[in-house]
Length: 317
Image (cartoon, rainbow, N blue to C red; front, side):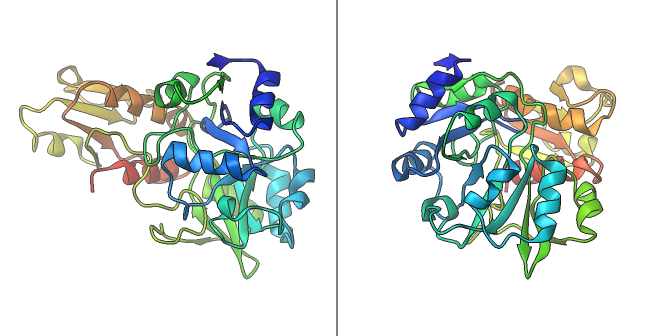
């Protein structure tokens, strides 16, 4: 059931059930992070492998010491700069944090969401929330309540409707190795913004067998329709004659658009707008009974890196 009743959602969570939760990035499949029952339900409903850690959502930076310890000074600076917001920090966990949350690692991923509904909910609870994206494992992330309803409407008692997500792609994930900052996942905060605080950063590659943080698998965020990523739309299109093709374009700059199902991420070429529109556009294309989707690679700078990262992982391997 889709609703705006936060008190009702709190009761569902206290009863160790799951809800659909709006955040500024994507909608989450949320459960009580201190309940083994709820955590197992998250993995089961998403069909998510247990080796892939979850992200804890907490109410404020002041709550951080309840779930993490030995926190580097740089992490505190990042939290004060970007929380509430789309930044996840991977830190040494407190001993009471379940191994289900952390995939049996000694670290836990944590963030404070920047969404009024999520924050009001968290402030009514005495436990943090584990909330990976509210989609079957590997599928396109949801950025409105209807996406969640399409995926899990029969399985969730409550889907909180917080409107369309303002950022539209997942959080940037930063960890620390030997107290030095490491980028685990590109996201809604660009690497350039992070470096303004940290001075430097190490970028790690995806890891399919033993991810150190959520969001590190090479195949993810993917439509059911075969998807290709290219910097040369014209050349690739002609390799698929007589096919029903969907085009995912950055800007409105393709001359033959009338022949195809087209989604334009930002007519003005605004990367923030493109990020906000990305998943909704992919959902529409995926529902259009196409033979394939061809996505245009965006400029590889700022949020363009994050969008390209999602499209790279969504493409046909």
